[in-house]
Length: 180
Image (cartoon, rainbow, N blue to C red):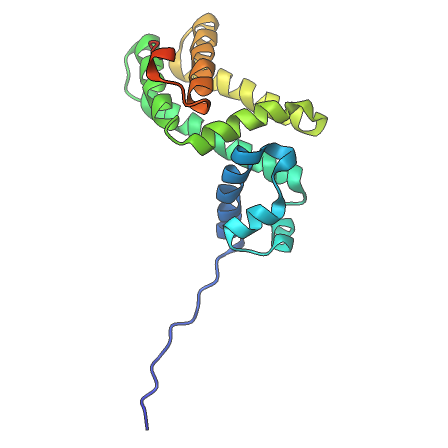
């Protein structure tokens, strides 16, 4: 008689964990294909779940897209807050935030997903939430940095140039600006 080996019961991911997996997969799909061309079946396949399960987690594709966008913006917001911590004055805070953003640009999927959200703002159901998220991020940068609005606008303008340079994979001499 062969001894039975105890097998560990397979642990199933919670719906929150699955939601996180779907958002991570959605970042890649939306970055590559945009809102309209990305398919929920491709997102499900990347996440290792069935397509119907996406709709158990998100009521529709719009809500999945907005959850993905919020995640990308929240990572930016968190990186900015962490970078500014302990810095002396608005200029140093913005400089540190710019350095943090340069590191974020290394994740091409997140940058492209961010740009796809701006492009998808032509869809009336997406425009207001994307717009509000952008405005909130600008307000947060102003609050966290303590910089005047015109400096924050300049900070974002340079960031947008860096987004385009990163998205197009431009040589460094096309975007070698002081990031702050």
